[in-house]
Length: 107
Length: 112
Image 1: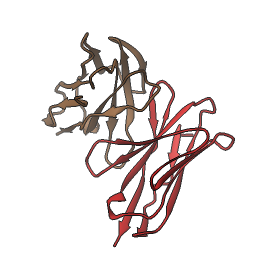
Image 2 (image 1 turned 30 degrees about the horizontal axis):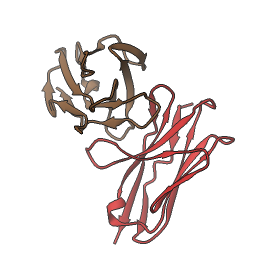
Image 3 (image 1 turned 90 degrees about the vertical axis):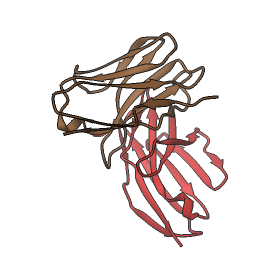
């Protein structure tokens, strides 16, 4: 079983829509989690950390479900500029990444 | 505050050659880690350095080696290059490893 697994998508949504996707992790002792955004052929950029109580940053909401060992990312009111690959990462002294979820927002 | 910088940005090497990639960590960051990202995949952890000592290694063969210097900059060396080594190599730095890592823009290595 891979350490971190993501739904690869692609998610193709219209502007203004809500899109959500999950990421599962295998190590139940993992303590810190992140979502990164990666644009084509560029480096990953930290989107947000994921806290136990869930957290929100503008249109983005991250949730952590320890019992089921998954994290989620929800994007509300999608913009064209949200089109990217979203990588979840689990920090167990090093970052373990999923393969990424591709989101395309269309006009 | 300067971010993470990597050099070179692009590189073409021949199978069997050796390559050295360089990374300057973000100011104040003492932890540097290296990742390999093949096309369509997530970044894969190669190894990590904390205060000049390797403190973690992923599933990569010994021909992948590294160094961290007193100023926390780092090098990744790959010997006996193989075609499958073609990838984007990312360096990331962090203050303690507990918080988010900041990535450099990467070195795109092509082995022919």
